[in-house]
Length: 445
Image (cartoon, rainbow, N blue to C red):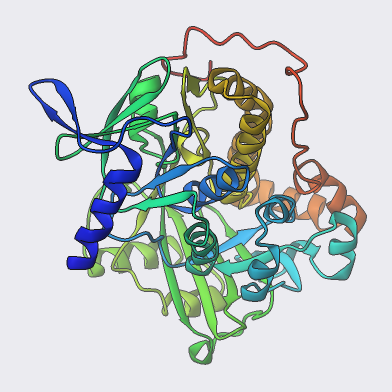
């Protein structure tokens, strides 16, 4: 407790925190300086990545997290080679590879007979084509790598136990309001606070996320306990009508990550272990024996309703912008949510570095550079979720007929738009002017 109090006082001195009294800010810290910090709201993967990217470009950053400690949900994550173009800029590629596994292939298997619907080899030929590997890594390990790099940078202040509730754009700066009647002032705000972003809600005022009627159960078990007849060294997706299972190894093959996803009318209801288990058994009743063996290992104490939002063109206003799921949340189909956030982070930091203090212009260029690519990820994720992952009957047979005959080269070309990476914008205005106001209130405008 004493350490926490000392650390908090230290941060108050450095980042200019105010206590709100009778509607007016009462300064507790030092006066503003020429290097007011950029306030990053949300300490997950995207927040840590943008904090690191900004600091490496010479900006001061306050990384703000509402939880008592910085952390993420402790399951696996897949990262395409496009992420490594950004890791190189962040200086963490080697550390990521040390903790990652490069699978033999990405496989889609039929839930009825276990046959291969589609296969993408991810070995030497894949790396030669895309210059970087496809990896799986424990989400906690990736977060620790980014967070350790943030802790090692003297221009980044970590602020846990700080819950943002709103903001003000002051024209020449910003003020972030937090629970406990305090305010933090800075140069700009980056909302990296996820699907239900507080910063986005004030800026765009959209409704609830778009629920699709699917839920996910996630489990990690010791590899030594996996007795099912399955492929241990691949990323495997078992595809079925209204359901799928994904599994792959973690941490040098000592752990096994399993995700079970299925459609249910009770996706918003909170149940107990018994009701969740009964739903799983009904959803997967006609699935392959290997899938049922995997399901028997699942921890079903918790489940997540799956959702996204419609793409938007603008997610910046004045000195405030959004990043990652706060800006463009996507379904998990392409395994690109974290990759898009990391691309956002490096792009935003580079544009701010080029802007000579003009945050408004940099934020406009940032959203103009990113919205089409992220929207394509959102739309393609929806399309393949509905028309490939979960089809049945003749449609299933047609999908298998098409994809099973595609060559390695054809598979790679299908993925080139995504895995070849994002070309960071160079100095100068965007090629195409994008109208900025008014901000969209809802829908896909």
